[in-house]
Image (cartoon, helix red, strand yellow):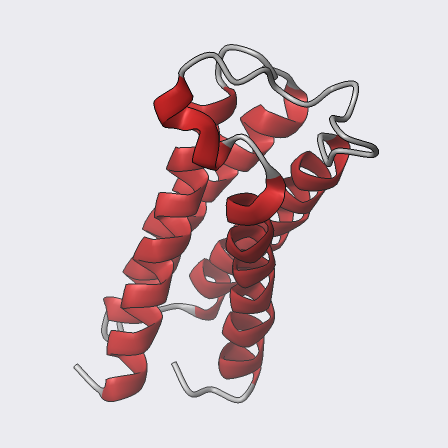
Length: 138
């Protein structure tokens, strides 16, 4: 495994963690189409992209179409994550759609300070994954 493949694998797993944590955080209060797209295409993107990156180039799993499908999943996931983030962004002290924090131990995830870097990072990963795909680095 090359260094690039290792970095891509680690970043993919971290992006999958962002997808799962977003689902767990919003599952009760903000269920909807955008969250479903974010979750299911995010998980599909993790699997398809990892299969593409780790598969040998001469195999069916290493085919360009598999990479394009994985990238498509990442783009939809990252854009859905940004929509989720901005939809519940507090406009004043608390946004009208912002989730109520029930458990004081959960207060650190109640604001945008965890979501903001996580979802911007997933978007940046989609850009970077696309770039390394287009330049045939993976």
